[in-house]
Image 1 (spheres, rainbow, N blue to C red):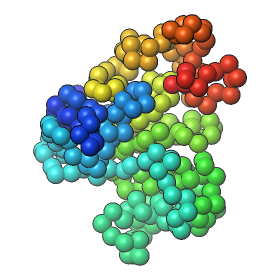
Image 2 (image 1 turned 90 degrees about the vertical axis):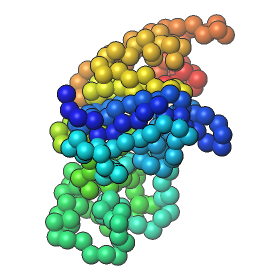
Image 3 (image 1 turned 60 degrees about the vertical axis):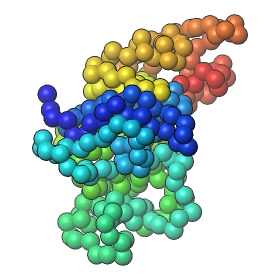
Length: 277
């Protein structure tokens, strides 16, 4: 088993005296692929902010390690939620990706030939050739998401943290995305936050189920009971091919309606908003 690189010990965290997470313990190991799932408001974003150092816990401690030795911090590549991006900001695709190399310097600083080569490689991997100079305000949703993903990967970080990475990405690139992440994972840990439970279970090595506290599953197939308990729905999961699919069983809510849960992106008129995972 690989060594831990991030450890959260008995963490309590929240905002304005409101506790969001309590009693959280988690170890992320080198070359782990950790999926974080849970209901809205359960604390997934809070957990990510703790790991990134954007939020200080009320109690408990967070430790980082490199090659078995405790260090102050780790290099982290971060893809934020799509709705956190200001599309009016005057920056090009290429500059977005370069910004992943500039945490300690201005974008006006010079980049080495090696760094420019890395950015060019990422532009190609993200399928963004030919629009490198295009302003982000003129990009499609999928193009912008790919540019932001490239920014998270370009610095060759110790850990890559992805918050809903397949939002606005078309299904063709989604398959390519997970193939790419499989290669990235050979060298570093990945933490993936997603509402797409089927995609998470198909691709990750371990699961953190977050809903006020944290339940850890080293085996990503060992989550059905937790999902039924916390989503209040009987759930079956089916995954196949490069783009996973899922089927959720019929269930009856207290108001007496029988219906199926649907994909978040489902256009099925029979899919009720309250039933989207």
